[in-house]
Amino acid sequence: MRNSIAIAPAKAILFGEHAVVYGEPSIAIPLPDKNVKIEITSPVDQATGTVRLISPQNNLDSTLMDLPSDHPLREMISLFTSQLHIGQLPACTILIQSTIPVSSGLGSGAAVSVALIRALSGFLEMPLEDSRISEIAFEMEKIHHGNPSGIDNTVIAYEKPILFVKGEAFKIISIPVPLNLVIAGNSNRSNTKAIVSEVREQWLSNKERFDLIFNQIGQISRKAKISLENGDFTEVGNLMNENQYLLEKMGVSSPSLENLISTARNAGALGAKLSGAGKGGNIIALVDENSATNVIAGLKNANPEFVFSSVLSPADLKEK
Ligand code: PMV
Image 1 (cartoon, rainbow, N blue to C red):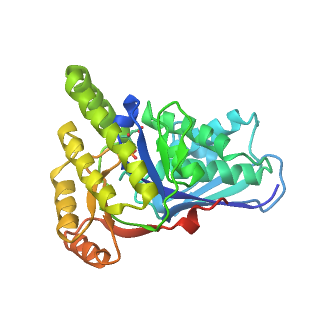
Image 2 (image 1 turned 120 degrees about the vertical axis):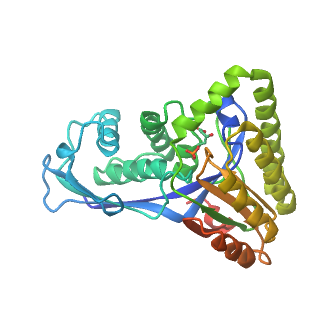
Image 3 (image 1 turned 90 degrees about the horizontal axis):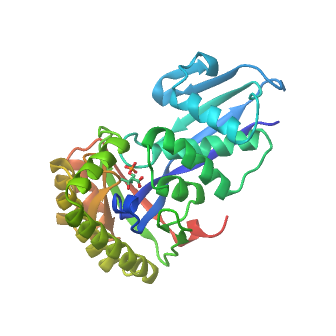
């Protein structure tokens, strides 16, 4: 048993949110500039004892046993111990620090899951493969999201851009040149589960229309994979705009998101769209060296809760 630290990145869905729930391909990338860091320390080597949880962002400092039984962290830890057939955790302090805006479609929940699984498995000296980490994080996602596609836990556990189809092996997308994104938004949207079930209601009442939209989005994701691999970001930007148009038709956009999207486009972004479940949350804008400063300034003027840039460079994506 030893002290253990793990970091997991935020994520953005570049293409295919919602359609992915209906079996269409989707593309997601890690955002290493924002992350969750979990540090587990044990002052004494005790096989069992008090587990203390500290999360400054959530004003939390409590023992595990004092948390309500349905507290997300308590549920995550009990899922971890049951998946690994461990009775009780050794005495330890678990410090959770996050720079990822919450409830904004940037994967903060899945990043806590992945970092927690990695930190606990390191602490217990039971190393786990990324595939197993992703699998356990998927079970944790189910507690809060009902019927998640699995894209969040996969992209965050593997930390690579991926083409993801629900229930199939994912493909890593290798992007030959740096991908520059600006992300902006607010942390005030309803949870993914509620938005996904609203889309489901709509689909049930008009399957023909919604199946067509999902299918068109799936085609965009397939084309985008090729454009990303060719480094053709003008085309990637166009495809982002097309995907946004279909998300608007689906009813998951919002006036404030559309305001940020048109601000980014007018400031010179190659393309912009909402990212994640929508109805609030965040937008992503694809920029190049010439437009980055303008887009950041324009978005800051629109006064969202957060604006940050994220560069995914080929060097970050080499095998770890
Ligand atoms: O939780 P978010 O905002 O990152 O959205 C997840 C993406 C959805 O496609 C809407 C749902 C899913 O499970 O894939």
